[in-house]
Amino acid sequence: MTQKPKTCSTGSMLTYSLGECANSLVMNGIFGFAMLFYTKSLGLDPTWAGLAMSLSVFWEAVTEPVMGHISDNTRSQWGRRHPYMLLGGLLMALCSYLIWTVPGFSRGSQMGIFWYLVAMNLLLRTGLTMFFIPYMALGFEMCTDYQGRSRLQGIRQVFNMAANFAGPAMAWVFFFGGKGNEQATTVETNYHHMGGTFAIATAVFVVLVCVFTFRWREDTSHAPRASDQGWFREFFHEMKTILADSNPRWVFAFIFIVCAGMVIVSSLQMFVYDDFMKFPAWQKSIAHGSTMIGMALGALVSMGLTKRFDKKGAVLIGGVISIVGNLMLAVLFLTGLVKPDATLTVGGTTLPLALILFVLFHASYWFGNGIMLPVSTAMMADVSEVRRLKTGEVKDGGYSSVFSLAMRMAISFSLIVAGWCLSGIGYQVPKDGKVVTQTPQAIWNLGLVTFVIGAAICLVSLLAIRLYPITRERLEQMRDRTS
Image (cartoon, rainbow, N blue to C red; front, side):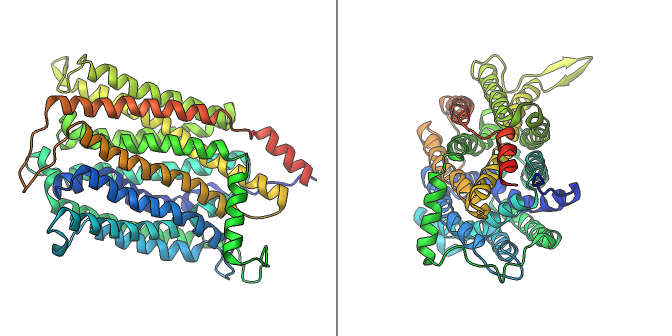
């Protein structure tokens, strides 16, 4: 008989996805506001700010494969995943508050601020690694049928965007909507209040996902070890085997490239809201919120696209949508065809035309990314199953960690690039608490970098994913042969 893949109910997918809310609040809060906090509030040079964030992500990239190996080989009655998810998640929540509260002893110089931020980011990323790698591997194990994987990852992405909308997007109104909207991002206490709120919510989501998914644990306390080699030899042998596997190679390349573009855009888009479009606080929330709605809708649509066009086809469609969205922003706003303050009067009602057009195409860019990310994650689960079908080895943690490694390396690289971009276009940061005025050329360059480079990088990523070899038919044939 043909081996029947394991699936899980919609309810289980929903409770599992609560963990993504914790990840979303921490990471999207940092990606959205950290560069603003470091530069506009603390007065740190953009190059140093980008480097502070990049070093911590590089640390995460190094530790994630180690965490995947540790989790895969853990022998515990509580399973391979949950102990790390709980401890790492709570550490992540604590550090996600401390990162926004710079003590007085670190404020004497640029280097003092820089090294405090590096230290806090390293601790935060350690907690994130302990939580996220076992959490992702747990999802691979809960649902193993081809279409169900796409559905699970799509739901997880929807939860990510829901938390992103309720947290970072609405932060513009709840925490940065003070008097003189454009300068609210220079007030440090605003970041303190936001960080405390997000940290509490993160801890709650970590506990909830551990409780609700605990029944999916596998008691591994008596499981035999796969090898009697030493720990380091086992680890490096496993990493070598995964990296030599031709099946995930193009997924790794794709996720590295597409994430680099996404992080550059997400790091700079806050400056676009603030300086290029000059949105007031409520319009910033709408613009920022549209990115989450776009990604959430993309994740929902991805489930149907994978049925119709398989996973690679769905990713290619998402990429084209993203490219068109950013290029339309460039055509409309960089050419001056639409001014940032343009309005339209309809029936005596004045509508913010610039905001409407900006949100439409800005959300389109993120809609395409919302299709690509969950589908590429599901691709990695398929690759891990192919390994299991060939060898009998469960290496979900290893494959998920190397997949995440590619993402983190991209993030580390692109955060440095984002800092270079701000410095290179002539963006000025406040000195001695004095507000500075950006030059028109710097503002135009900001739009150019955000819109055009984002589209160009996305195009390159599609060239990589075209070479991905696994299809639904091929995986089903392998299952039949091993049943």
